[in-house]
Length: 370
Image (cartoon, rainbow, N blue to C red; front, side, top):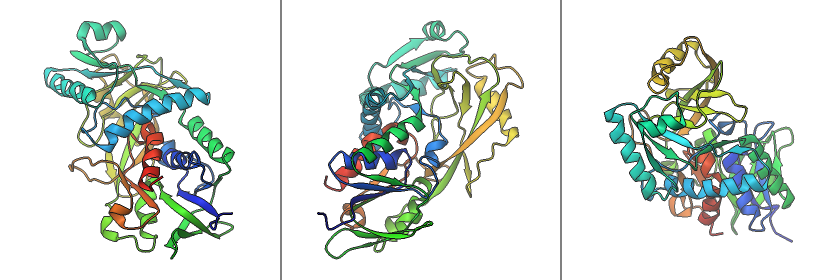
């Protein structure tokens, strides 16, 4: 009989928190996942593009590069074995002029460095043979990119955790944690039925709340908590037939991958996200933002009709860098960073966090020495 209520506690039941819980439960641990909302995946995980990223762009040797490629390979296998819908539709990274051509060539080089399979450079004619509505000078084809049902994925992760004897507890916010003398933590949970739980391991993966949660762990050094920036991304839906079968991406912009096109699993076309830094959580999609979308999209799809874009939804990305600052790597901090044994604290898990989630879970377990 364990001296702890659970072997491990995870804060946050989004895709990454659930993937961490899954990784720990696969190691034979009893896991409880605390979620402040009344359902899983209501934060960052519910407001994204549902894209499975190939791993093309990320800096050599970074966590993003390694975990995106490893996570993507694991993710397709997981989705297949759990009957979760996905479409490995492929993606075109397009250059609409010579300047973009140089940037796209750099993406190809980085993709090959990152061990992304199957990358192909296409001439204009080859790209148009695949997508006749496209305007481009050249393109890259990433056949491993796709889209999937992220909520179905999270339900499957929850099912795995529960099948292994764990629990996902909703409407139960994390309030505080105190390291115990003999190892482990006393964790205080709020909600309608407040409780105090003892656990051997603690993983914090609460997305936008990462900094606030870390600050409520006794002894967590404040200087190791990165700044919190809110990067809002808005999406517009096309009223009409989807023009492309594949994902269409421009070259990446500083701090993000740029406004892109996808055809969702229902067959509808969605454009986004853009990137606007905001001071507080606000999920309004301002209709006047459409103007910028029209001019941007027409660079690669000149036939976009006037009046065809309708405001859809917005997401907030948990960025740890501000406007104009270089985009940092994921932070999966173990005791070597914060000095607290048995704790893995995650910060800045934005794109490609969803694609990387299964590999992030494995990495968090490794940070705990498991």
